[in-house]
Amino acid sequence: MKALIPLALLASIGTAAAQPRLSTTEIPCGQARALVGRQGAIVLGTGGPTYDRFVRDQGFCERDETIRQAFVPALDTPQCPVGYRCIQPERRRFLD
Image 1: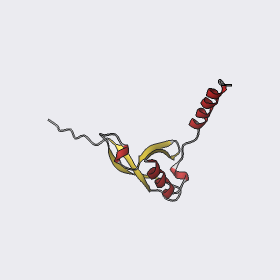
Image 2 (image 1 turned 90 degrees about the vertical axis):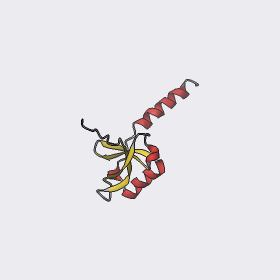
Image 3 (image 1 turned 45 degrees about the vertical axis):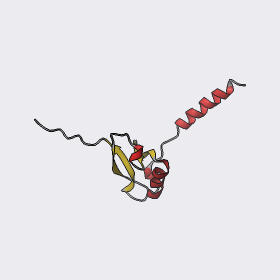
Image 4 (image 1 turned 120 degrees about the vertical axis):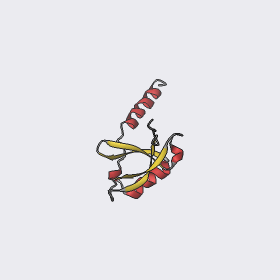
């Protein structure tokens, strides 16, 4: 019986991992914004096979990253301001 418990746990992990990713094109803009706000950082599909990580604020980025406002297609609008993306700042190279 004890051997069945770890097996059941492993089976449930595999099922959870196989769940489809939530897509912004299938939910209203307000719901997408609320998800980012509530989670702080979340990976969302943006239509078809594309996806990205969206954050509530810079606190969810790496130290050397900055934020840029992110717009995604949503069920009710083609340009939903869902939150931010973490980006590497441009490094200016000076020519000799």
